[in-house]
Length: 83
Image (cartoon, rainbow, N blue to C red; front, side, top):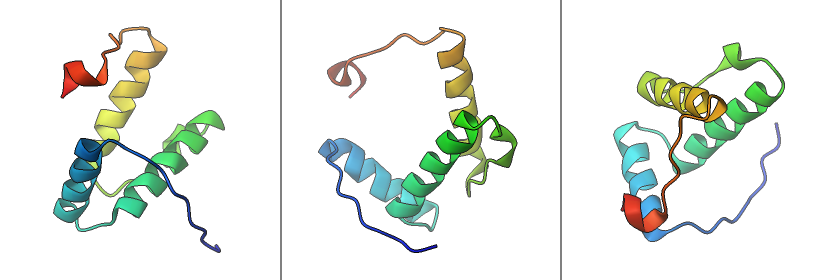
């Protein structure tokens, strides 16, 4: 598959966390975003069984978050409240 480039803007705290997480997982920030978007795509297409993420804890956390969002159990917070 041919790769392209995308520029995104994130808060510096999130960038630092993404880099640290990638380093600990021995992967790249690009791969983290790739896997997240692939998971969203598979979920949207009705095939969440093909979740392919390197970190099982990330997969579990993501699945729990999606379930909470779908069941309306999420209390949304502002960025300032979280960090």
